[in-house]
Image (cartoon, rainbow, N blue to C red; front, side, top):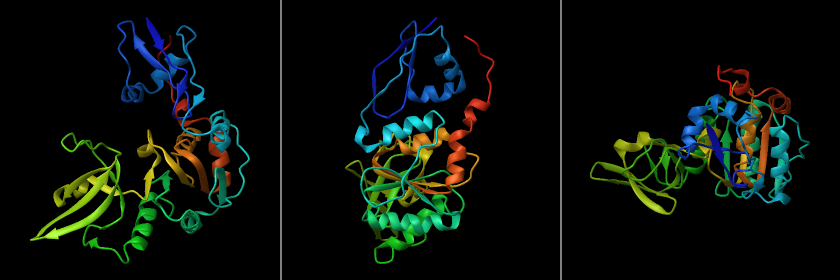
Length: 282
């Protein structure tokens, strides 16, 4: 027999259920991901009590983000105004794939750079993928700053840690910034700050970090940012659940940039996960 422990508030603007067994073992967020569709079957069963979390703490109701997020979650395309500069709310800039980067630069100019905004990408490849966005923004930022030749890292670059490192207490998805580039006596390293703590990352560990002007939506899960910029391009990964996850990372402002038709169709279509089936019935 399964029971549900629950709370009536959440910080992520989404619904979660916590499953426990009769022995009262909590199911962690990582275990929920491993449950996948099996977990969805359990939560949808009328034989298992459940409570939906509806109180939002991340975004103010006045931002409009919670309301639009609910519409998207229900498969309804919300009307979105064009971007009008820094502020609160959700907006959309219509652009072709080859124009997305220019519009990202325009939004960042309005928002005085990357310090207050995070770009969340659907894909890694292509003109609107995070690799190209990172390379473009890094090239612009590195023109007059100390850089580490051969590695593509510059003083001031935002970075993301890619693995769990228990020795440093840094985790896959930890976000930081390069404070300084160190090179002496043939030894090269980066002095970086993560959540207010400084870490020296040696050259042999550079493969553990990457640029983070833009990161994937997947890597952003569990994080929050004052403003998010989300390129929208045609991809098999894009569905309403990914759009929902991306936009609910934003606290004050969300700016979508890209193909509005692709955006609308992704919201209306059945989420990819629901197209798969499991053999469990409860």
